[in-house]
Image (tube, rainbow, N blue to C red):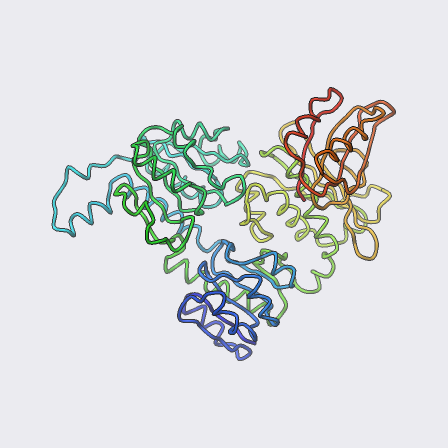
Length: 530
């Protein structure tokens, strides 16, 4: 079998592959473009990449024998995971190898930013002695605001506390109990970080919610003279707005390891600002981290190719072939249930209870629960969340996960139920699978019986059971060219409270939802994307 190593990994990782007689290993000497890769992957069974090489749908189509793509690192933004899944290609990463290295780089950048170390070093190398130009500030008694308290954010907090800093944390998914355990002050609104922090560091995943969130409006709300860091994902900080904020004096300095476009264009404007410290995406660039991820990805790929064992996969649970066959029918339903409850529940939850019923009680529960968690935590973890890291992510947020096997008799041969608890609030959904094709269906939503196809766009509302309300919604959707694919209605009694769920072919305009919400008999209008 042919293994193509596209980006540099540790020699020990390469040697791990080469010592197996089953493998023919090719190591590329430089990064190749998509067009350059196409003729090389025709007979490739496994590809190993870091962040440089792009494994696109076109590359996969040119590689009919490709079985696995291994990313020596955490993020898989450079791999088309959806295309890989469609083609049955396993995408693996190394989820824990760079946590400490990235946290240490962040804190190193923090100290360099406070004491202007790179600027003073460059001055000395140029033969100068300008002590007065490089007066810095102390970290002691300063306030550090951390946006995102996952694995790396938590490690940065530990180091900041050791230096006598006050740590504010903004993470809508972090529980109060977990924040107290870490000795950080959890704030409800990100604006409180902006108004109070002397330093702000970003440790959030890239999602639709976080993309460009630190922008001109955010900088305007920050303390004058704030210092900003990003060693997480390029694009969370708007680079043009950062440039303008530094030029105006609102931001005193910035330290960046990641960027919107990598490598940087020659005319990148932040290069010219002496207040900005820049490194070329070095978060995982330590000897220890690179050795760890190189060996880890080599072991995982070898186990899969030779034994069919899946681990550290972002698009499949970690299972041997026999177990996978047992749980496979439940996985699609599990992810849809998790995604549904995750979008309906509050962001901050204390507990998630997964109940197995009927024949589902006989299946191995861990991979199914992990798949539920993946769907449930997608809003918190973005593209970085997968079956490998979901339990650690849940623990880092203070989310207690419980599994229950029920003996309750129902109308269904096998069923799953997911309930999220936030204080006294409970949101839940249950589902089953139908027919020889194991088609998933949502059959219970917050205690009410329904029959919902869990795919596409769902429109949900609570309403009074009155004549004409379905026609009113249908006409309104039709007027705005929104097609209704299917409908589920559930009521407690005639004229009482009802739940209406529509499968739509597209997301209705916000103005339509606002108009519907004005009806005194309608409440809790929501859109869920499955």
